[in-house]
Length: 319
Ligand code: NAD
Ligand code: UDP
Ligand code: UDP
Image 1 (tube, rainbow, N blue to C red):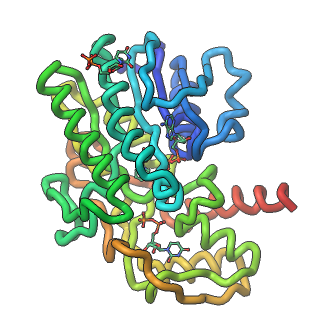
Image 2: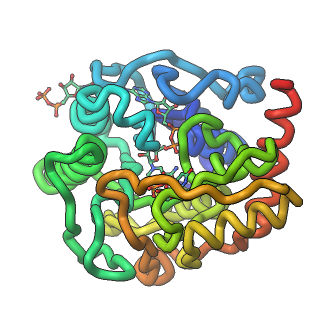
């Protein structure tokens, strides 16, 4: 993809957290964007500011059903991403990852269009190798509460690579690690949004377990830059490639940072750890550095400033 050539780009899940930032970036880069979403976890609110742009189109559609449109490239992001949402209707979650991937790959095959898959660090499950390189096959429970998401995403990767081998389809697979920023869903139970909302409301900060488990948090703008670079990468480069921020923090450290930054009087409360909750997660991004020349630039405190401001505004409007 060359940035001076205007392309017609399909973004599935385009009204979600990451999708809405991607649509915005693609429009800014001079492309036409077709945003497809069933509004399960996303909302019109996330893209309302784009609706006046004649190069932006919004289509309500569930990707588990076939889709016949004409585009030059596809970003497949549709899928609920947080445990609360993907466990709400786990069968639909697997259908979205698997049937959805088949439909979007069928569409890409008919058009011979380049197709990007938003995969996840969850394909590594509760990893026994740390940090996780792309060559690690993972440690995944096939029958647990997270399996609809983890195994669905693993099967989607399989489908992408089989369409690539069998139909010579140009594919780009990103394994996304925890990402945060404005337009995260306020009720999705993710740690960053929960802690910020609790701190702003002065409510107790809910730490699951003892807070010693770790995560690495990538700011959304860094991640979207990674998506664009992956899509623009040399044709033979398919991924899978890890995209995330290697800076690793304990959940307790995150809570303390957010309390300090918001000046909140909120206290920490400890609650049971959810089942299958990974102990440690940190991306190994050597491949992304080498193949894409990409690495995150936004420090946690800087990204949190924008995210706290977003939720502060949201809470004030709701008051
Ligand atoms: P999100 O829930 O905000 O966005 C997902 C979007 O997909 C929503 O707008 C939702 O309505 C839509 N959707 C769900 N099922 C659909 C269906 N069947 N048909 C059409 N649209 C459907 O989540 P997000 O954080 O923006 O995640 C986007 C993608 O990135 C997902 O595929 C997710 O698995 C992946 N991902 C995200 C993270 C993260 O930290 N945010 C980490 C790893 C992977
Ligand atoms: N498909 C789609 N849009 C298209 C082309 C195909 O949604 O433009 C769907 C179609 O419903 C099919 C799936 O993609 O079930 C897989 O397509 P493929 O051509 O790989 O398989 P086949 O149609 O041969 O089963
Ligand atoms: N977590 C927490 N309190 C919360 C929400 C989450 O301690 O209010 C923990 C959760 O148990 C996990 C980590 O924070 O260890 C990240 O959770 P999240 O759901 O954001 O992402 P994921 O588990 O998918 O990485």
